[in-house]
Image 1 (tube, rainbow, N blue to C red):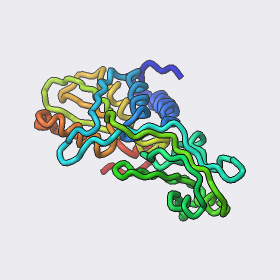
Image 2 (cartoon, helix red, strand yellow):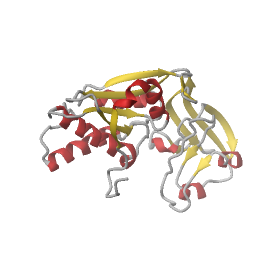
Image 3 (tube, one colour):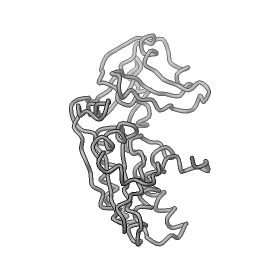
Image 4 (cartoon, one colour):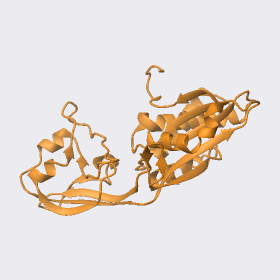
Length: 261
């Protein structure tokens, strides 16, 4: 796909197709609250708007929170006694507990089960789980697959790193006739989840591109940030600007017919 920009005219079908194409490109990326996944995502968004990318070092105090270590993952799997990959990160990045520490060992089924997550009420679904602020490791799988596990030895591998780095977020500012701001933010930290995160990213990019061509009363600031810690970090580093914010909107879960809140 080679899209240089979303259109500034709003033909619903054309704009919808372009947002859908952007979601399709972003979907495979394994994002988290830090790391190369969110950087790669923001770099793609720079094709649409002149997004400024900020890096906040690990260990930075942001109010009573601290920016965590940076997490990156290359591969992860669980192999059975025959050497077959029965859980494979390469097939779905949801299979890994997001922010898992590195691990490579052979363990029993009993021990493995202590690190497995399922949704019994939805036996065919792979759940999404995180462990941002507690060092742990784990795998997510369908409950149907969980019930098929045999009592044998398993090889577990999570090829990941958790070390000093940065929290990354994107910012785009449009100057209006006044200094009063309308702040629009969306989360850019979840992995392959279309409605939660990706629908918000696509709609926010579309809105930012459209407003770029308009005469504006308010100034508009768009933030593409990791959930919770990203918002806290931006606020802690931009307290002097908050008095200008007169309106705000968090764009999330806009891919279904849910109600605005």
